[in-house]
Image (cartoon, rainbow, N blue to C red):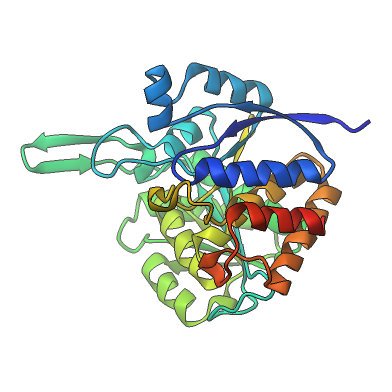
Length: 334
């Protein structure tokens, strides 16, 4: 009898419940045993419980230490704080991990991309320390610490060493923000000294964006602070077809949340046309995290077969299948 993994499940808003249901069905078809603790978050949770993140959800993640999360709507310019940022800060999910890799059979402008984006997830401008100095003047504080910078740099180099990645670039704006980004760079340099087999480089953030668009193949692993990582990871997703085709993991010492990084797309919610691939790829990362490597490889092979055959793809990638039919196709390949 295999181990049963108890996982916190956050379906999310908009298309979230649809893609989450599809992924849960596929995961259960791998033969791995799951027990799901399901919770709403965001606007849907507030309607039901009067809280954007219910206390029971916090307790579930703390207890299970693993969560799978669909997209949650975040209001722009007002409303409640980002659920994603709140959960990352609450559980010290300091490493945001996004692999960027082409799926077979899917034509893009940049074939054969294989990038790893590692982003510091708890500091920088995203600490949310904002206030109005005087009417019409808002001040946002950017917080960079030696502890946080060293921790994410060690994560990046340890991952690279374990998985045979050949080089790491630290991305910065230390030519302007000499103290904050300068500290980030000093910490990365100190950590790099302990990994002589990995080539270490540094690029300024704006130049990096240009270089990525001109030639993404020059990079292997990118190490970035919070805001830069958020922007660059979305830019890189375009190389392989968009945010609907890339996974995301938020990792910490005590808990990990695996999530779709795309939006909740309320305009297509309930129409059975959403693509669950991003959350499914995040679930593959979760299986590896749970030491279910064989199931992860089996699932990845099934997903790649569906994309290679092109018979049951969703509309966003040129097909005509719905969410449920796509999930059925992956299950059939399993």
